[in-house]
Image (cartoon, rainbow over all chains, first blue to last red):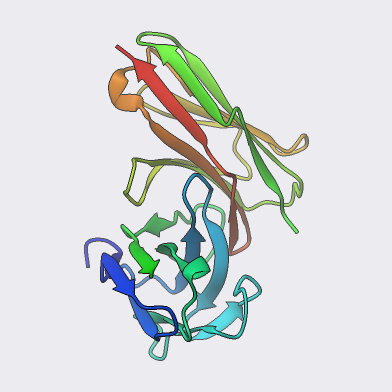
Length: 115
Length: 110
């Protein structure tokens, strides 16, 4: 695709429910990142994929959060038993693998509100 | 763990002024550093990428510098305009791990 696409753009869910957030990276980009951004703060790293595998999931806050990328393209961030504190904008980025000239491109984000 | 700090947190200037935004990082073994712009309620737009071997990059009225040894980068904006009002974020990449500062919220007053 032309850019990184995230769906839905907005999601309102009730506390305790399960949600899935989707990211379609730029075609051919093998690196994919998920971030979470709260109001007035910078993006907080969650997880990074190289191809299909999670190369670094150290940013996932707890075991309610899980992400997959089964075919090395689209990724889904899954949140179980949502809590009000999970409310934030979830950002996805993709880039080519490789050296120091690899530029990361971001989607518009999914605004998650847990009520 | 890479720590990224941006100073100031907020900046308000009159139109036409030149200004400098600062970014510092703790681990100098970086692959590159990228400056982004974020408008309210929007995603991140890439402005400039500086590779670890480079000292600076320019795009239009923007100039970004990198000093790896001291762990610092600056974003220089010349002749600021109201349309430059946004939050500016720097992101430091260690191989494929990318970490952000909290951003500088810039307001350019007409």
